[in-house]
Amino acid sequence: MELFSPSLLAACGIGVLLAFLFFCVLALIMAVILLVLLGVPGLMLSYFLSKEGERLSNCLSTILGVTLFSLLFSLFTFINYFAIICSDRHAGPSFGDVRYVRIGENYLYESIDGLPFYIEGPRDYSNIDSIADYGDWVYGKSHDKYFALSMADSTLKEDSLFANLELPDACDPSNFRDGESFYAEKCGNVGTGPSLFEVMAKPFFWALLISGLSSFFVKKVVQKIENWIRDWRARRKAIEE
Image (cartoon, rainbow, N blue to C red; front, side, top):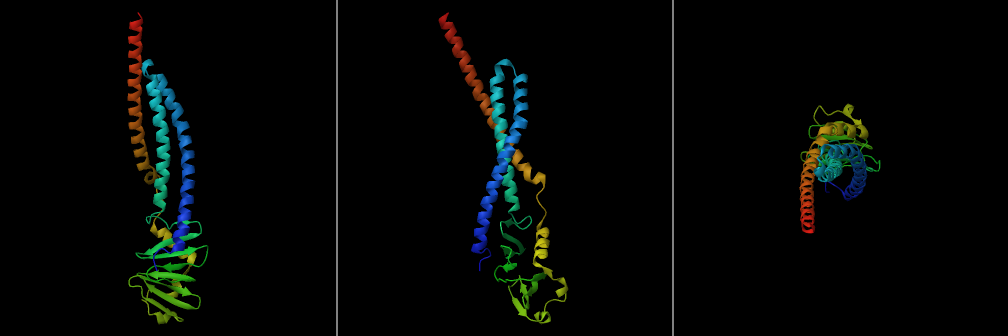
């Protein structure tokens, strides 16, 4: 069986879409807040600090720069955050009723719709009541029998007596944890949530760069248009005189 089952992929796809739409709404709200906080003071400063002949170009470039920065920074930030939490670098993803966390190079530990956890990979195992791990071995109890799965070579052992599994001495039933506790522990071992700097640093840089270049370009274009209009008026006035 494939590492990602069709049911998991379908549920994750729907969850990803809903989460992305939710993040887009949050990004829009954040952009509006930034636009108000940065746009009004920036526009006032551009107007009062500019020379009379440069006020229009400075104000237009400021409006464009702040608006573009607010939109891009908000959008890039939420996209970056969305990408980080969906990666393997952080805690196991949870999309809707689907939860999973990687427990080996080729194995996932997952649950759908609150049902018992199961292991999915080159060798699957379902209906897990309790579980523990040691090295490449994942072992536990499933209903009326014990099991042990080697994530190295996909060897599966099952028996009604734990001792008959012939596991390393460090493997012991006293290490068993319920499915939720094991999941929480594995999620914590994958990594903590992203830091504020990790989420916002790159979006801030790119948003500032794009908005700054766009603002500079618009300012130059408006200045050229203003100069052309002034020259045209001067020529027209000279002709009339």
